[in-house]
Amino acid sequence: MKNTIRVERAILNISQAELAERVQVTRQTINAIELGKYSPSAVLAIKIARVFGKKMEDVFELEEGD
Image (tube, rainbow, N blue to C red; front, top):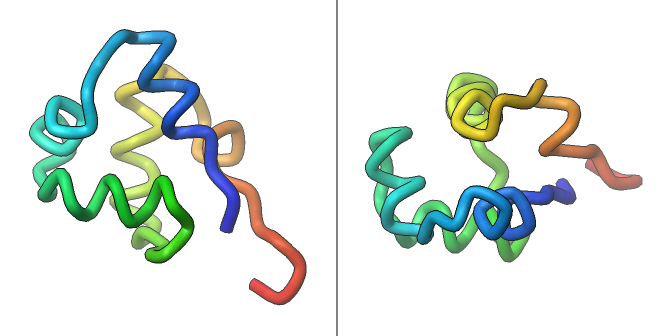
């Protein structure tokens, strides 16, 4: 699953740790999602998108084979 979390964080000027705190997960979880090593649950994906003021589909995109 592709995502634009790193770009969205840069726009808001927030760290992985700050995003993690806002959505109540660890910084390591945010890092793994950004790197595509972990696909978030639907609930977590919605929470992340809301921090950025976007729809989930604007932050996350399925790749072929997902």
